[in-house]
Image (cartoon, rainbow, N blue to C red):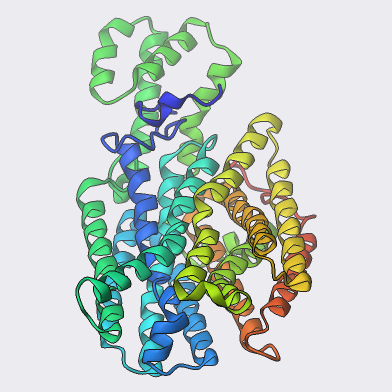
Length: 510
């Protein structure tokens, strides 16, 4: 069945625990509310994580007497913290659930955000940005939470839409932080030195409120608490089997009410009644297997042995390599694009170059979901995970081509520069979305771990690419940085294109 606009606000069809549609505009529905807080929590986290670069170009650089290399050092340390947190967050999601992990990361990251005003030196900036980088780890629980709440047929769309809207925070901050700063200077009469420090109070408040709302209004899983997830799914299985036995004995009337009171859906009752009466189609057989599949794919409590088994496979390596190149590119470009525009077009100034650089991050709201939706559509029509995987590599190679074009051409025309940046944004951001449309299929019993190490690989890519920028012959030789990254991304994608989408011995996740 195709997309229906009403599915954006109507209560979704449950299959049998997760919905087959995304009620993105219905916060009163539990699935819609979890989706809203997933992307919004990620959005405010990215806003704060990237709140420094828009003001670093001129204001903070001048106030703290920073060199270009010192700014680069602070960018790298901010990514390093997020890498560490993402590795920890994956296992934390498997152990404690995504909701508590998400809220914990937000509250921990809110503290250094509020302390931004205490920075008065390069060393202080580096330390503070390292701890603000904790917020970069919010991506992991965002993706794990949506993966657990939506059916495999739409999980790519759900993940990419949540991530795309959240990632847009890195673009919105280029508009909001200069706007807040300018308002404090022009309307409140604060000095520039004090205004940039006070401006960080705004993301601090939003992050804190979001974490509290998340804790108070949302569950861990569609069935309730994280600690009881296995028992809850088993309860559904037991109720189904109990009712099937009663229906087979011709006693549906006497037992249906008691089964319904235990929480079994009308669809499941109807399905098993048909089964008992012999009116059982292949489609119904497939639906009947969903609970069993859900039981098999329940996230396990992580152990060293299970973690090594999940991470130590070639399909997991594929995810790490492609996300290393795609999200690593995004992190690097987000950090240098404003300065690149300011160098090539000095007339733009700090605000103008920041606004144009913001477009790159804002396009995540459209382009990243496009990658996930494409992945879901291709999978729906081909029933092949190979098709999903080939989409990732196609987008990755095209991303590399655009990086090389920007690097070698180094256009001095605004339309050409912004056009190439938009093309790069599409293939890079859609590639991120397509990658996380495949992630839920790989080792679903260790979904948090796989999500965490894949997300961390993206941060590692950002660190590596920023080191390329930091140690190029001229730290402001941005064209050289672009084409080097382009070559790396093409090599990365081609080197793992032959690997299977999921491990050969894996039973679930298809």
